[in-house]
Image 1 (tube, rainbow, N blue to C red):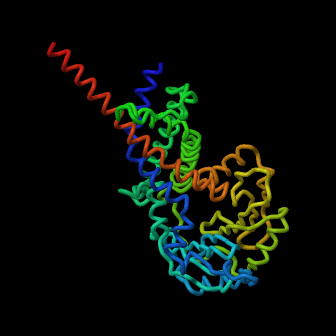
Image 2 (image 1 turned 90 degrees about the vertical axis):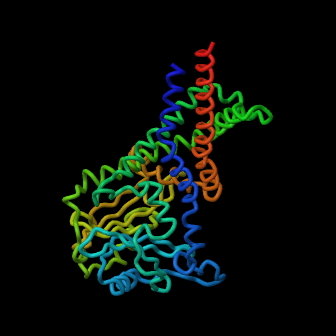
Length: 377
């Protein structure tokens, strides 16, 4: 049983080696995506207000902000709006170009009502390109505009990563006996084996979390694109799909009264006929892994009438678990400490891949030498 499991562990690791190395490297970098964006684009992604002591800053009326965006970019419609109130991060406004289903991003200062960047594709900036590489390997759209080859490879890689995490613990089922054992002065083969076992044991909880959440996100993306939006059913908007007379600021204010201690974080606009205006946000919760989008308030796009208010704290266990996948996948649930931990342990598939390939090649060459010695004897 263990021998068969070991062979499966080895061969599947070799099959998924390149995708897992790419995911490992890009994922560790993307843990600090916000910080990197602010460093590389200080005049667009970052805001200076938090540095001004004693200055009270507040967001302008959202109707004014929205009007400014719509007037500045008449060839686009609003798709989504990430809301930040800390004075550090600029809002990120997502636009859909008319007569296409192409999404673009704009950085925006909600305190000064000022556009900070021109619309760029959602893969133009360095970290956005890395994010696209991370979850599609730049293969989605290959051969066909709506193909999902990258998502499929990502799903398979996540399945294999999860299997490797489980099978590794089974193969080295007494790993806790040597959690700190590393034979530095032995041969490279022995050292590589110890390092492989040691890193695998320490990183296994994070590896399993990344694998399971990766399966979920890739499967969800594939289902959304293939089954909810077949290639012949993609919608290309020609104009905004909401009534222009709607007071969006009043809807945002109303969302706060619909749910206890609700803080809006993300606004989803109707970019397709079946989509209505939804305010995503969060509430104080005992769940440390609850995301910033766990609760929602939805309004009719034509009348502005309340359609639904969903308190994430009252959701069933399945919804709560899948909602927590975002925080768990990106390691953002525990501030800087968890992000550093995820950044470091997220590199473990890279190190495990290097040591694993060396162990495999050493075993293979040893078998060849034994076979040759037997043949000549």
